[in-house]
Amino acid sequence: MAFRTWSRALAIAAVTVRRGCAALPALALSGSRTRRAVLRKHLRTLLTDLGPSFVKGAQLLSTRQDLLPREICEVLGRLHDQVAPMSEEDAREAVRSAYAGRPWPFADFDWEPVASGSIACVYRAVLADGRQVAVKVRRVGIGPRMRADFALAESGARLMERLPGMRGLPAGEIVRQCRDAVLAQLDFEAEVEALDSLRRNLGDLAYLRVPEPVREAGAEGVLVMEYLPGLRRIRPEELPAEVAELVVKRVLRCAYRMLFIHGLVHCDLHPGNLYIAPDGGIVILDAGFVVRLEPRVRRLFAEFFLNMARGNGPYCADIVIRSARSIGEHADLDTFREGIGALVAGAASRSARDFRLAPFAAKLFDLQRRSGLYAAPEFVFPLLSLLVLEGMINEFHADVDFQNEAKPVLFKALLTGVPIQRKAS
Image (cartoon, rainbow, N blue to C red; front, side, top):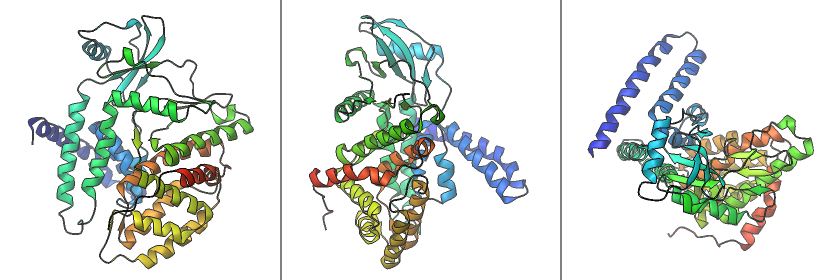
């Protein structure tokens, strides 16, 4: 193990011990509910202190209720990656280093950040030709630290897979997929390609705007894109009911096209990346956390979603079994099929008000766990994209039939999309 990885391991241990000691008094609290609430708060604080690899990995793991208890997944799902911005000194160092030995493209640069995340901060600037731009600057030293984190996580996953009772658990594959998705957010050249792809894939939607990257002005660790003025958080009560309904349907249409047709999925459409205009327009920012779904995954997810909307539980059960990462030696497939049939029957054609994706997924994963099935890790990402959107949908228009809204896109994907690719036997 490299020196940097060992050094990071010691730092992680120090943070864990410090936070663990801070949590000890909670064990003495009377009332199990109060004790659990305090311990959950300490867990969130611990993960935040450990850094972006842990926060983003935890957000992904929050969807894996086939592997972790529901209560832990709920804690992980509430993690918000909101951190203090870089100091002006660090920001200047990062930007000046990126443009060392090449022309300085900015006529003006405002060093007061307009947005801050654990991987990068965003600033306003003016190019030499007068264009207003947003400049995303990667934090100094964040890459090596995150790579060391995942090297440690992979070592732990390999050990876990050898433990009694853990054999068959795809821990290593899950960590690798989390690693690839999270570390991809360090690659600003890939984000430029993702922005261009989103603009191309969804460019026929007149109500949608995705900022155009300015390739010639970017540098290593610096992404420059057009600045979209006037963005602000719109509350549901600010919109007429018909506009709120229109907004939800438009957002769903974008998400379904990403999931079922194009396969380039934005997994982080939270309020900081998804803006609503008073006229019902939509703006999608920051394409750092996007994933490309393999044709087989996209097809199976589309088939499951369509048959869930139709109430076809047996076919949904068959899809889950076919897509499972592994099936235990004593798997009870008959009980699983029966459970999925009841679950799908209760979810078919429900509006957003009457249907919650998170509890549905929790029950689905619980059935898998009890029946001896391990879900395919790649299904984390399409599920995550919908889970992130669910809160916004229910906030703006809870009566939308989001399953029915998917059907036109699903039919198009299944009729004209790529053929299913079955696993080799």
